[in-house]
Length: 553
Image 1 (spheres, one colour):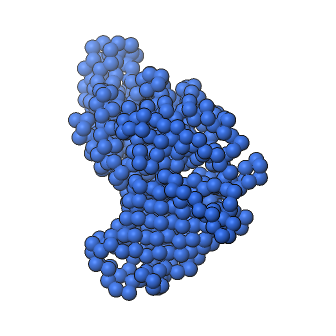
Image 2 (image 1 turned 135 degrees about the horizontal axis):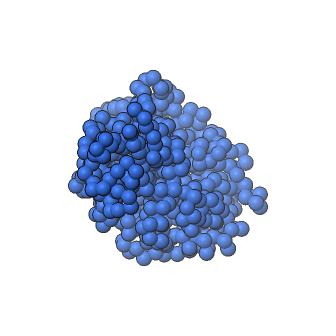
Image 3 (image 1 turned 180 degrees about the horizontal axis):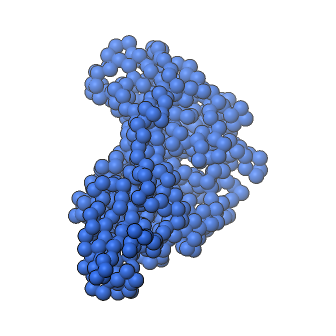
């Protein structure tokens, strides 16, 4: 049977090739991965309520020294628990009610034994004292750790970035996305003359006797560990306010002294338009109590909750370029819009396991299109998201392996955004879609979620079973192919070829520039009843549907 392709997307892999399925984690991952990624009873036995992280940073020696207070509620009876800290950092002691506790280290996991059983429901605390030379990021934010740099005046300019690698690369904590601390105090001491900016509200600074100054920041909302940030530099501060859905939101900007003149107009042109667009689509900014901050960093950027790291050099696009190739991406600052989108998806709604990092990145990638939609119209937003397809590789699923601290492929960004836009097209009711996005942020406000939470919510509130659609695009590497067959008498038939066994997705087709008709192909050949449709005039809406198309004869 002769086949020819009428649509072939850049970098797409035919769904007729072998599906890329999950390999059992035991075949791929180490004991260290399991210790970090799995929720054992030694981790689920306690729920973190509060941290006080108190750390001094010596920029010249690239050394840190400090402590972290763990305040928790026991969820079951226990006498041993696990917390996490990279093994290149030395633990000096673990103190419980004035008593030093014995502990054991295995890779980056630390096991602490208590002198008596802590009962379920009990409120308690312990403090970890530690020091050492933290991992230095070689290419932040893509690899994690401390980013030690200097500004153009030779002054220290330092930041942390540890998404994926984990917050325990530089501070002791229960390093699993499922347990966000309810609130925390971040106290960072730096040589006097430098400023530290962290998450939350500024509580004040204290001059210490050793030539250091301590800066205290309080986070009153739940925060995931990798968002906790240190930003040290010769900063200047300026502020503004935004009148939004939940009242007056404080806007604070911390930039290098030399860049203040550039920063003021650039932030003014990007921040409030972003907030207006995202509050329209997603609902109120999730952290009014902690405010919104941008902090200039030497690395490109990171979604650090209420203290977003910014390093896009005060230009539009992604370092001046538009990855979509449409021109729409050069009308706004990519880092501001993308990283701020994470305040809703990633920071307020957080995946329970790193395997579901696609939830963070797919919705935030999609938020870029919605920003364009809000300010430049729906067609512009659609063109942008369509242009992003050229960055998709389709080599591996965008979901990772659970319980081993593993995220999916980088396609979680562009492919994930394309998927959500396609779901919008399937629902075919923009106001309903907007209410679904707002509803997600209301239902899962400051909560951790997984794949089923998100997919089930969208299916329920759209009135459409979208489970097989999400399964195909999230759990498999390949995109589906819509196959057409025309009989000798001209009758048309079609079916889906896909990795997902129960794949079932509506799609729009038309005859020769006419009106689009919605058809509902399955995995079995079904007739296509569209008047005047022929092999030569068949048109499939591949602008909105990310699929392959084959016509067979």
